[in-house]
Length: 205
Length: 249
Image (cartoon, each protein chain N blue to C red):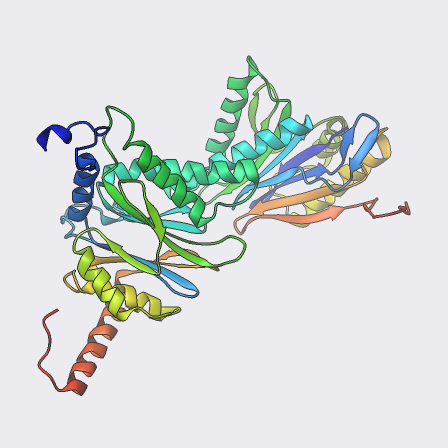
């Protein structure tokens, strides 16, 4: 039921993820941020087992930070992707993490990039990618409408199209999404797409 | 006496750990380092012994960041420093990972001092031959702090301190001239203390300034030269006002 998808545009990369924290039939909260800002120019969108997701992504984030302090410069996106994949691969045959990851980053001389890393340590550099049941709909929408070098407005439009498909066609569709982008100015939250707001007391849906 | 200085874990009859004291000697031979705590600024300065012409001076950083809000300068064996700094950097991130909070200056000082102490008690290893000056801002209260550790593993907080070569002269100067300062005044005080023992000039001094908003900033040689010139001018003006023969510094 968790949906994470992302794409690369002209000078930026974006990652969108649903924001529901679900336990069997109960929705704990609808504003859980699953796209971590790894460092100044990297985003890590993760889906999967909730405990593993937080544990693994925080572990990657702190190791990326130690690298930057030790060496005075940040890791490249490609290096981070390979490091992440390695950690998943090392744990795979012992105590695997059930986390799927989309890593988006911007490097000064390379530009934006997106990496697809699944829970069994598959690594692919991609222009667009998605995880979860939502991927059936978002990948199809992106296959139809994606072109390389899209502007931010066109990309957000495509993201909204994907969200509409997920909401209308997925049986237990998550109500809210967060969109984050990374470009030469850094990684930041772009917008939320909410159809249900968490409120104290009775919610008016 | 000679029988009691081989192994680190052995006390001498008069209660000395000679290896630790010899490590302190190594510190005294290291480059001068000074730290001054202001109300909103903390300054670290180290002496740069003459750089060999062919060496890339950017690869010899003597003031380092441990985290976004903590910095360290040291005097003594630089290779030992690398090991301690590496462990401290990992501990800073490990602390953030386990308790979701940045370290306080006291915590990381206690950690580094603890590491240094461990190596005064285990068999077969020698102590780290360096003293550190650790500065930073408390992540929540924003209070600035300056701590010093030494090879024995003791640590304490200071308003201003110096270590390494001629540290006694620098500390004496600081004791005479310390007052609560902020901003550029704190930088000037640190440079004045260093100039007591170092041949003047931006080429021989490395200064880093830490503020709450901007973290650690290494000053450019030109900036240091400008401040040194200001200090010299102030000194000359003070002497002219006294109308006394100039003191040797």
